[in-house]
Length: 138
Image (tube, rainbow, N blue to C red; front, side, top):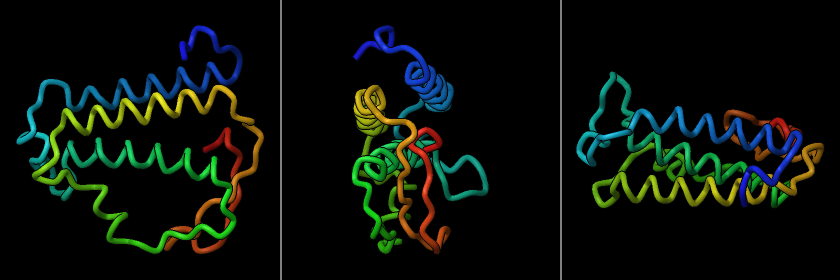
């Protein structure tokens, strides 16, 4: 859906998301798979791992809003950690394609989203009690 057909607060949110994605993706412009897997700081994170993580996080938040699961818990910490690493069988091009697909799905969903909807957040080690947040804030 074209952002030009969306108005008001929904358009503002979509524009903000697009700007944030564009700024983030500057970090991987012109690099190859080997560079995307290379640690560039003392952290274990790599640029490819960050692309994978940001895409998975965006998808996860939309799923959280859509599912409204009051019993959701993060229990598979290995799966949580795996999203931070670009595997040898993954290419940066594939990770970027996945990220674009997730961004497109997010934009389609946000257009009709009730921004005041109160969403139960999953319980996780970093949020051990159930919290609720507006779709707008998410």
